[in-house]
Length: 228
Ligand code: DER
View 1 (spheres, helix red, strand yellow):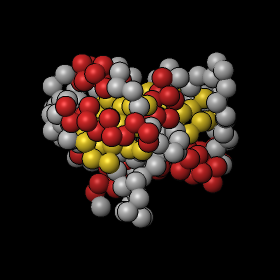
View 2: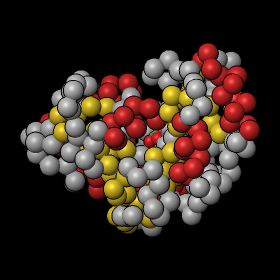
View 3: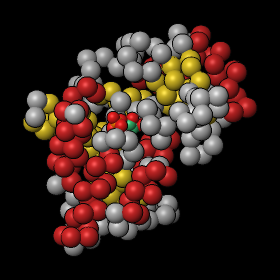
């Protein structure tokens, strides 16, 4: 599909940003996956010397399969470049992430990175955030109260179910729950982020504000580089 072609184009462009000797953060999702695969090819065939940490068990498994040397979290570890996807991005490069359930590790790695580069197909670019439901990672014990608090904020909370077994809730890599909040439109992402992070039991939310430094957006067969 041309959507897959757009994801591959964005991923291919991002691989070109990786330099010898870099420490690289590896994102999660269907655009980050081809990036990881192509990066592995450069390591195996091109002799590229890098070390990397993945933002999910799924990405870690893929990175291992394609031969990318992996680093475990350790004090002082920082990444020169992290490449990750997004569910929505606006002109200021504010993001909604978490569609793949990896938002906590993604934000941890993004925060430990000197440069976060987003890779996205054309469907991700929006004028205003919020049409994509905002994911939260939630501690199971807190769920009922978090649902109440998000509903009070107008967020229409929905517990994410496991795709393979829809009778079970989905779980993050940490074993927490995922709640998707249907705000429809988020006019003030900063204030919503501040309201969410004080609700006990919300481990992390999918608003990534002030983290992305550029985005490769595949549009009409071209890879455009967006900067805020
Ligand atoms: O969960 C995430 O934030 C992932 O980056 C993902 O949602 C990105 O979407 P994609 O699979 O279309 O790249």
